[in-house]
Image (cartoon, rainbow, N blue to C red; front, side, top):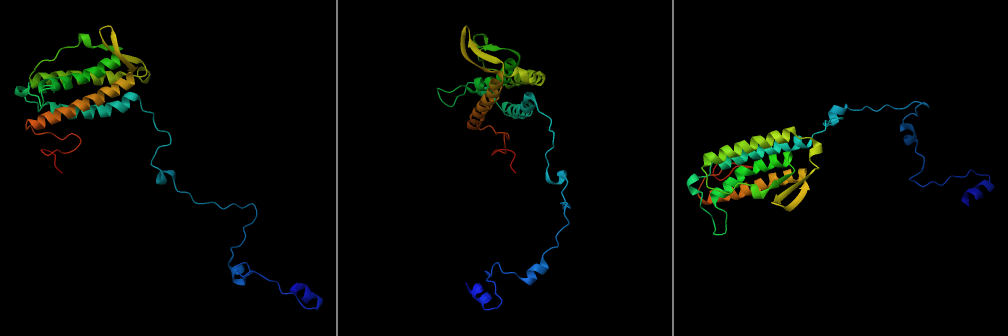
Length: 223
């Protein structure tokens, strides 16, 4: 309205600007010069190796390749514990309903053989499995080493296609369960670790110094 009145009076209209949007000569002077059309700015890029540590085409790892490092570590730790079992304490048990120490140690020595069986066979029949007995620690270690060797050879020779195949635990003609071979192998490793944990408690209760397992114990391996 004021601009129109000024024009009618012959005067020059003064534009109204919001101060936030008003033209500023200094702002105009400081603007960067417009680049010619068709010219694209090239941004500097860091080399890929400087920003990413992963390879672009990682080599696929087999199932056996993922199992073997863990298997080796767990078997080494288990053997250190098995070495500490006192032969003369075989019948000892922490409770009347508990497994005797000698039988628990024997179970731990047998279990790597279950892994070899699972990879190479389609079933395990408990009806034909050996019965528990009290053996010397030296005998248990020999049996453990034999079973670990067989399990490692079976894992190393296995193919990925072997692991989805069904495997069954039986007792005579009765099937206790059936599961994919890969699931059973993983269960055997976990099962062995479980009984190794029990064995560590049995040894502690008999005042046997415990070796490091996943870290230092109160007896050895302090940092």
